[in-house]
Every structure is written in C-alpha cells, then in structure tokens.
Image (cartoon, rainbow, N blue to C red; front, side):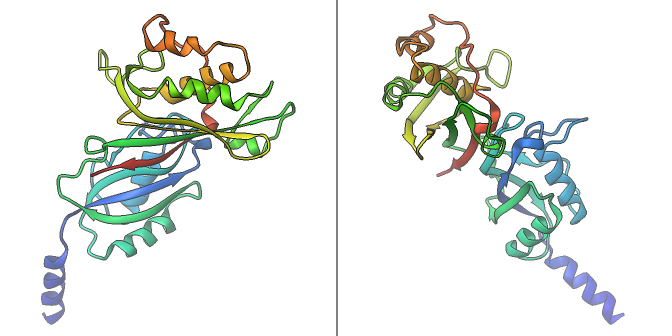
Length: 260
C-alpha cells in the first residue's frame, strides 16, 4: 500500500514540458531532415530514439528542412515530453540512444508555445570548398572540391550583391506552392580558411529550397572567371528564371538558428 502511494505521488511530479534541443548531424547518409516514409532522415532517427525513452508524441517540430546530404551543427528541434528528470539526464539519454551520425548538443526547457521554425528570427549557413585538381575522398565528405581554382576577391564582390531584401526566386523555391520568395539577407561573406580552402557564411531571416547552394554555385563560377558578377544582378532582378549552377550538398552546414 505504501509503495502504491509513493508511485502515485511520483506520477504527480511528472509534468509535460516543451523541450528545445540543438542537434548536430553528419548529413551524408540521410535523405534530409524531414521524416519520409521509406528513407532514413534525421527526424525519423530522433523520433525513434525518443520513443525508446518513453515519448509517445506524434511528431517533433524542427527549425528547417535540410536537403539530403546537408550537415548541421545548430539545427533546433522541439517536442513535448513528460520526462520526469532534468534536462541533462535527457541530453545524456538521447546521446546514448541516437545513432553515431546524430548528436544532441544541448537540451533545455522552452516556453510552452515555442515553435522552432516560426519563432526563428534568422538562420546561418556555412559552405566550405577547396581547390584541388585531384580527388580527395576525406575532404570531399564536408567540402566541395573545385577546379579550376577560384579568386577570392571576385567572390567577395559577388557576395556583397546578395545582401539586402530581394526576390530570390531565381535561387530557390518556397516550401509551399505559390509561397513568397522575398528574403532578407543580413550578411553574406567569403573568407579564405586555408592554403586552398574557402568558406561562405550567409545569414538571412529565412531561406528558400536550394537557395544557398545556388548562391554558392553562381559565385564559384564568378570566382573561376566562368561568369560575370553582373549575372548575380540579373538573377536578383528577374532577368534569369533559375540559376543553373547548384553546388553539391556535402559542403553545406546549418550553423545556427537565432531567436529573440
């Protein structure tokens, strides 16, 4: 009888909370973030891990869909869970249950109405490339091998054109049919990160499907001298229907999602 009363009292202490989790993952073996019926996805793996811990929700929420092969170090997800332990215990339990190519970086309790996608004020992506004539299997897992080499200053000039509020429909498509294609890019900048390696950092209020990869694809053409910087202006001003140069997914990572 005493044990039954203790169990009932313990049950009363368990409260449904909304948890915010920052995820990192190697996107190589995933068909993207969003759950799909017959493909391996990050959402599918996370929900599977949560169910092993006693979660019985229908779906998690996430800040954005990353393409197949795209990586992340700052993806944000949320879910409601009557966990009954502290956040650190949930962090440890998740990482003990998730596969090796996914990890929870942090777990915290969020406001009950928190929505990772709709509450986000900005997102930051990073694209990495290196210039080398021959294949490099290890580096190419996380960067685009480019040849002929690029000129940094040409790409930097091109990147400045992307900053501001523009219609980016030539660079990507909205997640919903007839959705808006105007986005605000707060920062877009190239830097040299090694003897033959470069990185593109871009921050915007939101991104279209394939937007960053098409940005990179066109800018690399400019850096190689195969396109003019004016082609970026043409794409932004509606003189191009679709930018045809799509950079590979492996070089792209979601770095952070920003909230107030």
